[in-house]
Length: 266
Image 1 (cartoon, rainbow, N blue to C red):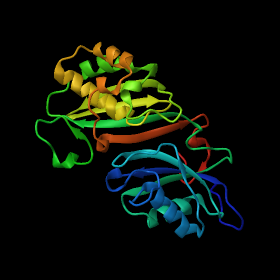
Image 2 (cartoon, rainbow, N blue to C red):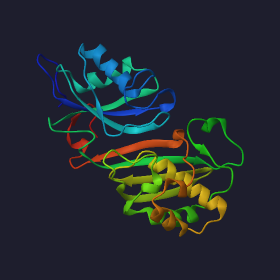
Image 3 (cartoon, helix red, strand yellow):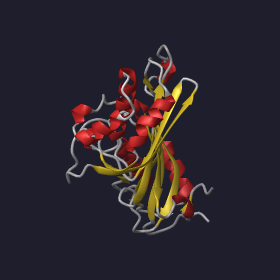
Image 4 (tube, one colour):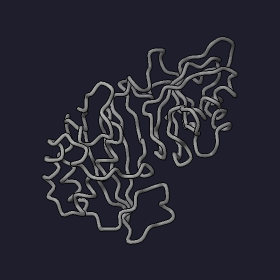
């Protein structure tokens, strides 16, 4: 049963959000520039009449897209979840949409409660660049061998030190992360990378993709990946792939979002 409109404060809400990151300076509100967080918070203010700060599962960079971003806020009014969902999407521009809304528990936290995140990276591997892949996928013109990419990426699965694969060291100085899986498939001229892990360092996925493509282009053996990991040096890894091929696909929680009351139940 959907949450009804009425007087008094509403529950904590988790939003499932999709956006085309091309026109945004990333997720997080900052001085100057259009951001996804800023646009949704503006829509919440217009719809509810109150200021609310959103907390997201992942603070995506400029140009990065999302198919399944999750963000929570404490709703200042009681409003039906479907009305909230359609109302926010109606206020927002066409490059961002609220796909679903969930009435979660008061201790739900979109970022710290996440147990896994899944990202997708698209590489267009046609002989010539495609205008339809502009801002959607990285173009690599030399033929990519999926079996080679799978072999080289297999050394990255596990709980490892990814110091060679981050733009800068995190505030706590910890560069160990758990990468649960890397799946790589070819669909015609598209090579699709899917990476699932508990958390990712800044630019980690983009550096992994760039390194894999560079290794094959140079003719490195797949085992070269072990040397790059052991070096703990960003200069040992390859180029950073552009942001527009990256998509935040899914965020997982110990209590799945689908178990909560929602605007659009499965």
